[in-house]
Image (cartoon, rainbow, N blue to C red; front, side, top):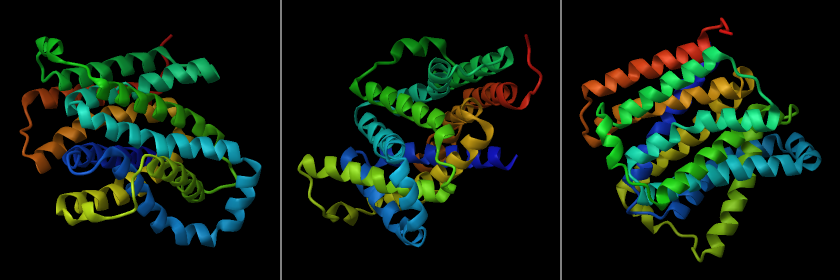
Length: 295
């Protein structure tokens, strides 16, 4: 049960990443936000990495390609794609598209690893997805015709595919590394990848954007909660409960996003939010907690 609680917390903190990422989107570029986010995370993790460097280096020498892939997907890729998407798409579209991540996990898992899925899980996924769509459409089906897709939507789709692939590949995480050692080395690798792109694009290493309190406090939140805590919770939980079940928890993001938007952006919770919450919760229960398999 504790791993399910970890997943709930991970998704809650990531929902905040959407809110604060959108909040500062006019004050900092996506590349700057992604690079400085992981740069500061790496600074915080550095003491731990140095203490455990012998084991980390030993595993890195043996499985460097796999660890580079994890660093590229989980650290450098996903959030960079997300921040680019939030520049030009609406929060509504971003949440709707992000809710498709479990579907991508199932599709990629089936195609790559021939992962089996029961009928009851499919029913649960369908109900959760209906709940997400109902929530995004604010309870009015005609709102679906008002959605306009942009280049930003394509970035969000790329982020979903990126994260789905990262999640299903976690089954190959080197067992010689603890979850925190794994997080430390992938953060190191991912930050290097981001730094190469950052400087290649002509950015200089400076912190003038932190003079704005909005950016400073948002970055502090993003570094601690969606980065360190969420990644740690997600990594250890995905290996315990499996990729398909883990992926279903992303359906909670529109719920948490609505609540956080109410708290921080002054948006009002409506009746359709609660209907969506019930549908999503039912779907997650069927696809994760109900053990009986329907044939």
